Length: 477
Image (cartoon, rainbow, N blue to C red):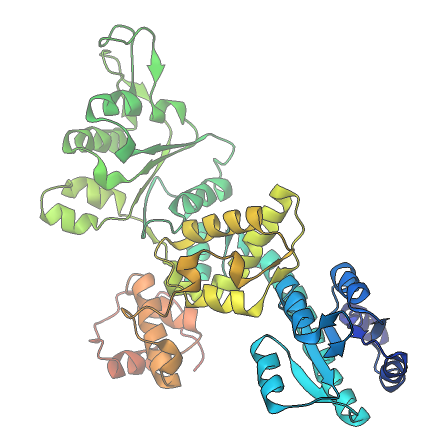
């Protein structure tokens, strides 16, 4: 028990908060050091603005005590420089010339607090203790986020939301057994990452993974790309070529944007899936292939079947196993983890260490609707990390469309929903993501099926018999 407590204590050890006091009066600096001597801080002092600003840049303190009136520079100007350098620094202004107008101006320009001289030692201690506790809380949160990122990263994907954990679970379950899989979801959600995860955790992970975008090839070349051709099969065919299925033999072939495949090609693809044979263009011989096929689309294939734009038999063959990838808007609780993931990746790629994001930058990212999903988030962080001059990402580094965004009017403001409404909304989302399986939904949510039925009834969801009700044990209520 003693050893466990010691280990826990070591894990909880955090660096002391760095505090910088800038004042041209040495007596005030001595007083600050005396008053805060027993607060467990790392205290630094500067008696002139230039030295103080140099220390801010070099030490990056969590808190700065700044005299408002100093020779050579206005305190408000100094405040603006510090906030511009790092908005996360808490700046407390101290002045012997207090006025309500200057206090309001200071707060508007980013000051954390405003103390008149002579200041109360007790009030200063109390305020610094609050800042020190906030600093420790952020340090602990950063460590926890690092641990979460490590624990909730799966085959290149990051997520801890119920929708993503359910997706990870499905991938693990079907990876050893599938022949064909359909991956659906909006543009930019990471469907290729899901396909690569399937390949990576499957028994054939040592084989090739080959991807083909069906919308990027012309109809005349589609057959050659899929099945290959022999020399002389058509004008320009000067040598033999293996198609995607033959090249991926023993591994996996991904057909992205499958909804864009011409109907004639769909019939030939169905033959490959059924017989595991391909026939090169210009050759009468058939070749056996052992390849798993993953099709991906952002289109509604069932609606395309009704419109006769997609073969019904191919749709049924592909959708035997379907993986739905949620949009970023459906998994906003993953946003902080994803931000940390991309920050670490691009910091390593550009060899630029980053301390993190300011709170106002995080708020702006959380307000944005992310129509481009994970791909858009990745591109934003790639650009921001490349261009940022500071090691802290602030709102000024973000694209204008994100800074000026407001919560989407197309969806309800979930911050104003009651807890009961949030619970019902989340239950419907999980139910939809697991294909209507109520038993699985109850297990993901950690509630009983009776409780789930009540939530669905209250939300207006018509209760239907659940064919999978006996396949999974119910969760606790």
